[in-house]
Length: 195
Image 1 (cartoon, helix red, strand yellow):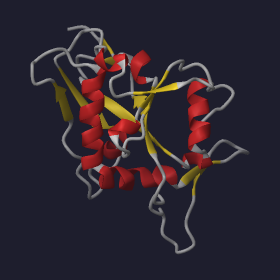
Image 2 (cartoon, helix red, strand yellow):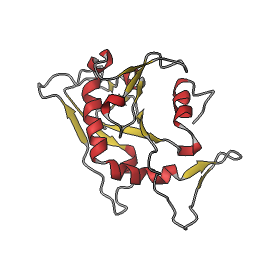
Image 3 (cartoon, helix red, strand yellow):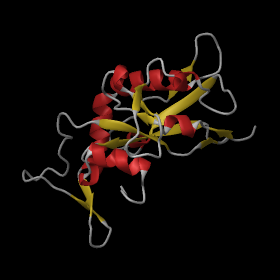
Image 4 (cartoon, helix red, strand yellow):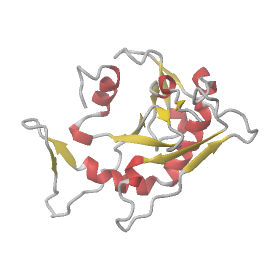
């Protein structure tokens, strides 16, 4: 078996707030333009594209933030198996729909595991990360209500035969003191708007 390439060109176009209603997912018409127009993901042609170049009928996914806490009195949920009822090729739409449901089922675990990342800031002077401790002395405050968590892509753009699980990366609004608007600018122009 050889490596399989994910359709990152399609997934990178998604503006996907993972806990919002699925109808709020949008597709960037031009992912390299800061002022691109957005189209609803539902009924968009991108949803019908194959999720990989190998036209897989089954894919495995996990959430990187959940794996980081495994063994620290936390057991991450099982990997998500994405497949179609008809046994056909897994599409971008299949991945989005099934991952979206998975995210919402495991919302509290995801928010808990993202809290340490949310509560660290990168120093502007030396580039090191420092933990922000709230006044009550708690090491990590909960992610404030209303902060959005976004799909930030995959850990790698390929699926290796020896490591068939695709790791999903997430980004939380306010992480590193960045707004959602800044985050989307960084996706289109990472050199001008570094995260």
